[in-house]
Amino acid sequence: MTTQIQQVDQELVLAAAHVARTRCRGDNHTMAAAARARDGRIVTAVNAYHFTGGPCAELVVIGAAAAQGAYELDTIVAVGDRERGVVPPCGRCRQVLLDYFPDIEVIVGEGDRVRAVPITELLPARYVWADHQVEPE
Image (cartoon, rainbow, N blue to C red):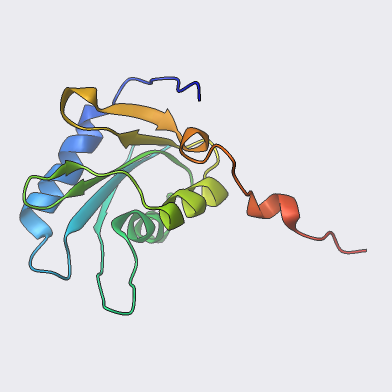
Protein backbone atom coordinates (compact mmCIF):
# COMPACT_ATOMS: atom_id res chain seq x y z
CA MET A 1 0.00 0.00 0.00
CA THR A 2 1.44 3.38 -1.00
CA THR A 3 -0.08 5.85 1.41
CA GLN A 4 0.33 9.45 0.38
CA ILE A 5 0.63 11.45 3.58
CA GLN A 6 -1.27 14.71 3.46
CA GLN A 7 -0.88 17.75 5.69
CA VAL A 8 -3.06 17.22 8.77
CA ASP A 9 -5.90 19.67 9.34
CA GLN A 10 -5.07 20.54 12.96
CA GLU A 11 -8.09 22.82 13.27
CA LEU A 12 -10.31 19.84 12.47
CA VAL A 13 -8.57 17.60 15.02
CA LEU A 14 -8.91 20.32 17.68
CA ALA A 15 -12.61 20.80 16.86
CA ALA A 16 -13.31 17.07 17.28
CA ALA A 17 -11.23 16.92 20.47
CA HIS A 18 -13.15 19.89 21.91
CA VAL A 19 -16.51 18.23 21.20
CA ALA A 20 -15.27 14.92 22.65
CA ARG A 21 -14.11 16.72 25.79
CA THR A 22 -17.19 18.92 26.28
CA ARG A 23 -20.12 16.99 24.80
CA CYS A 24 -19.38 13.28 25.26
CA ARG A 25 -21.00 12.19 28.49
CA GLY A 26 -21.44 8.67 29.77
CA ASP A 27 -21.68 5.56 27.66
CA ASN A 28 -24.13 6.90 25.06
CA HIS A 29 -21.75 9.46 23.54
CA THR A 30 -18.08 8.43 23.58
CA MET A 31 -16.79 9.59 20.19
CA ALA A 32 -16.83 12.92 18.37
CA ALA A 33 -16.21 13.60 14.71
CA ALA A 34 -15.42 16.74 12.78
CA ALA A 35 -15.52 17.15 9.02
CA ARG A 36 -14.50 20.02 6.80
CA ALA A 37 -16.90 20.90 4.02
CA ARG A 38 -15.60 22.06 0.66
CA ASP A 39 -16.66 25.61 1.49
CA GLY A 40 -14.44 25.56 4.60
CA ARG A 41 -17.11 25.03 7.23
CA ILE A 42 -16.42 22.59 10.04
CA VAL A 43 -19.30 20.32 11.08
CA THR A 44 -19.14 18.32 14.32
CA ALA A 45 -21.18 15.50 15.83
CA VAL A 46 -21.09 12.74 18.43
CA ASN A 47 -21.98 9.07 18.16
CA ALA A 48 -25.28 7.73 19.49
CA TYR A 49 -24.40 4.41 21.09
CA HIS A 50 -27.21 1.95 21.68
CA PHE A 51 -27.09 -1.77 22.42
CA THR A 52 -28.82 -2.43 19.09
CA GLY A 53 -26.08 -0.63 17.22
CA GLY A 54 -26.42 3.05 16.65
CA PRO A 55 -24.53 5.38 14.38
CA CYS A 56 -20.87 6.19 14.80
CA ALA A 57 -19.84 9.84 15.06
CA GLU A 58 -18.63 9.81 11.45
CA LEU A 59 -22.09 8.81 10.22
CA VAL A 60 -23.81 11.38 12.42
CA VAL A 61 -21.53 14.11 11.08
CA ILE A 62 -22.53 13.19 7.50
CA GLY A 63 -26.18 13.76 8.41
CA ALA A 64 -25.43 16.93 10.36
CA ALA A 65 -23.47 18.30 7.40
CA ALA A 66 -26.35 17.55 5.01
CA ALA A 67 -28.78 19.24 7.42
CA GLN A 68 -26.59 22.35 7.16
CA GLY A 69 -26.45 22.19 3.36
CA ALA A 70 -22.87 20.86 3.25
CA TYR A 71 -23.01 17.94 0.84
CA GLU A 72 -19.32 17.77 -0.12
CA LEU A 73 -16.86 16.87 2.64
CA ASP A 74 -13.09 17.02 2.11
CA THR A 75 -11.65 15.74 5.39
CA ILE A 76 -12.94 13.90 8.46
CA VAL A 77 -11.56 12.86 11.84
CA ALA A 78 -12.93 11.02 14.88
CA VAL A 79 -11.65 11.57 18.41
CA GLY A 80 -12.45 9.53 21.50
CA ASP A 81 -13.59 10.92 24.81
CA ARG A 82 -11.38 10.78 27.92
CA GLU A 83 -8.43 12.11 25.90
CA ARG A 84 -8.16 8.94 23.77
CA GLY A 85 -7.11 10.96 20.75
CA VAL A 86 -7.69 10.23 17.08
CA VAL A 87 -9.52 6.94 16.42
CA PRO A 88 -9.69 5.41 12.92
CA PRO A 89 -13.11 4.76 11.39
CA CYS A 90 -14.66 1.31 11.70
CA GLY A 91 -15.28 -0.80 8.62
CA ARG A 92 -18.87 0.34 8.18
CA CYS A 93 -17.85 3.99 8.35
CA ARG A 94 -15.02 3.43 5.89
CA GLN A 95 -17.49 1.94 3.40
CA VAL A 96 -20.04 4.73 3.86
CA LEU A 97 -17.37 7.41 3.55
CA LEU A 98 -16.10 5.80 0.35
CA ASP A 99 -19.60 5.61 -1.13
CA TYR A 100 -20.58 9.19 -0.19
CA PHE A 101 -17.21 10.91 -0.63
CA PRO A 102 -14.75 8.83 -2.69
CA ASP A 103 -12.13 11.62 -2.52
CA ILE A 104 -12.35 12.35 1.22
CA GLU A 105 -9.19 12.42 3.35
CA VAL A 106 -9.37 10.66 6.73
CA ILE A 107 -7.16 11.66 9.62
CA VAL A 108 -5.72 8.58 11.36
CA GLY A 109 -2.78 7.66 13.56
CA GLU A 110 -1.77 8.65 17.04
CA GLY A 111 0.45 11.16 18.76
CA ASP A 112 3.01 12.71 16.44
CA ARG A 113 2.18 10.09 13.78
CA VAL A 114 -1.25 11.56 12.96
CA ARG A 115 -1.69 11.82 9.21
CA ALA A 116 -4.36 12.35 6.56
CA VAL A 117 -4.86 9.57 4.03
CA PRO A 118 -7.36 9.06 1.20
CA ILE A 119 -10.31 6.86 2.13
CA THR A 120 -9.29 4.55 -0.72
CA GLU A 121 -6.07 3.75 1.17
CA LEU A 122 -8.15 2.54 4.13
CA LEU A 123 -10.08 0.17 1.83
CA PRO A 124 -7.45 -1.25 -0.52
CA ALA A 125 -9.61 -4.08 -1.92
CA ARG A 126 -12.77 -2.03 -1.97
CA TYR A 127 -16.33 -2.59 -3.05
CA VAL A 128 -17.82 0.55 -4.58
CA TRP A 129 -21.59 0.32 -4.32
CA ALA A 130 -22.23 2.62 -7.30
CA ASP A 131 -20.12 0.40 -9.56
CA HIS A 132 -22.50 -2.53 -9.02
CA GLN A 133 -25.83 -0.90 -9.74
CA VAL A 134 -27.80 -2.22 -12.69
CA GLU A 135 -28.57 0.43 -15.28
CA PRO A 136 -32.25 0.59 -16.32
CA GLU A 137 -32.84 -0.75 -19.82
